[in-house]
Length: 113
Image (cartoon, rainbow, N blue to C red; front, side, top):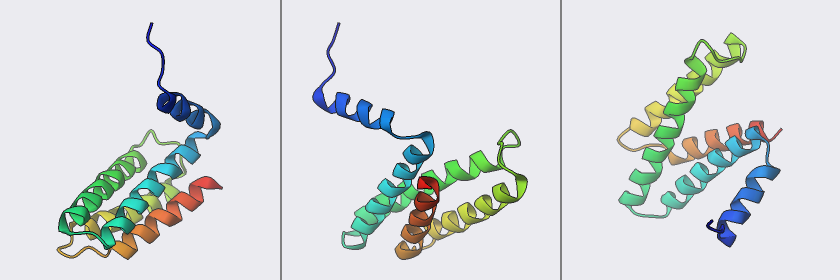
């Protein structure tokens, strides 16, 4: 029987103390930190952060367009629209990192409520 490392124990305890929505907010917050860090980094930092954000927003879009999603249709449509806007920005030749970070921040804030 293997014992958990201190890091694994801490992460496990942290996850237990957050609601699922708060865990989702943390994903957006992590993505925002990567984007903010990339603003002062090099092209590779930007490419990684933007690619990670694109994957995040692809996942969000996939979830909200799923007919089995329990959110009301108008809310799902609004979220899908925002997701597509962020995805388009991530695909731009020179993505607006501020826009991406601000959108992530707004979603994280909404999920923490």
